[in-house]
Image 1 (tube, one colour):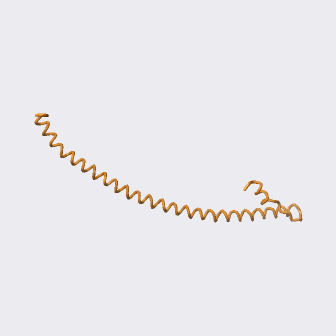
Image 2 (cartoon, one colour; image 1 turned 30 degrees about the vertical axis):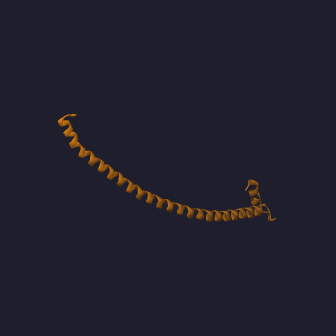
Image 3 (cartoon, one colour; image 1 turned 60 degrees about the vertical axis):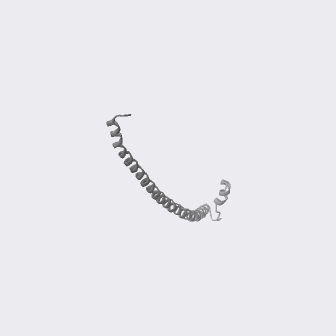
Length: 105
């Protein structure tokens, strides 16, 4: 809505019983409109918060699943590394033997 559309919602209330009573009636009218708007916003916010909670729950489940997959991947790399180290260590004996006999003899 445009600002001029809101201005008609804030018209002064005329009671015909003097300036003070007009001011009181206008204040009461604006307080009533404020309370109604706050109730509407409260309902809207609670709906948004419910949606936000669902999104957070979904994000937590996704993080948990990714954590499990990451753990499996780390174990796989650990085993590959250990196998590589074992294979490398088994070659040390042959390397020492080659150096002892001399290269190319």
